[in-house]
Image 1: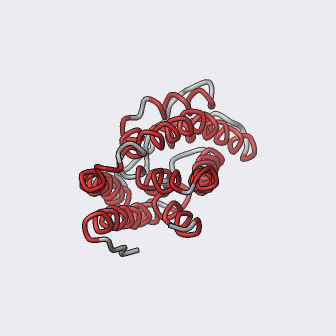
Image 2: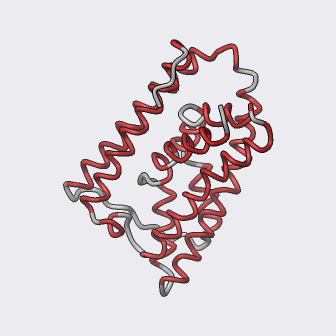
Image 3: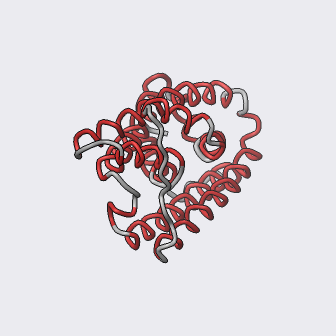
Length: 214
C-alpha cells in the first residue's frame, strides 16, 4: 500500500471514532462550558486532545508491534474486524437516529483538568481500546509495513481530526449537535456508520479474496 492510499483510508475511517459521541467528546464539551469565551474554550479542547494523544500514541505503537506477530492470522482477524466494524456502525447509526429525533444529548461533567480528562476518558474507554484493536488494526499494520514514515504519516492523518473536533466542541461550549444542528449531526453519524461498514467489508474482501473495494 502506498502512503497516499494509507492517508486516504485513515482519513476515511478516523471520523467514525473521533466524531462519534462518547466520554472524550463529553470531556471537551464540559471543559469548554467551564471556560469563558471561544479562545479559552478551544484551548481547553486542545488540552483534552493532548491528554487523549498521550495515551493513544503509545497504545497504537504497542498494537503495531503486536500486529507484526499476528500476520499468520490475517483471515480470522479480518472476520473480527468486519464484526467489530458492524458493531460500531450499529452504535453510531443508533446515535444518529437518536440525534435526528432530538433524543441524543452530550453529557456534561465537571472535570477540573482538561489534560487529565483526556487521558482518563481515553484509557478507561473500552470502546476506544476495542476500536483500535479491531477496526483500526489494519491501518496500524499497514503503517508499520511502511516503516517509521508510514507510522508517522498514518498517525498524523488520524490525530489532527481529534484535535480539530475536540477544540471545536469545546469552543462551542456545549453538545456536538450545536455545531451542525441535531439533524445535521444525525446525518453525519449515519454517513460515518456506512463508511465504517465499507471499511470492514474492504478488510474482509482483501483477506479472503485478494480484492479491494475502496
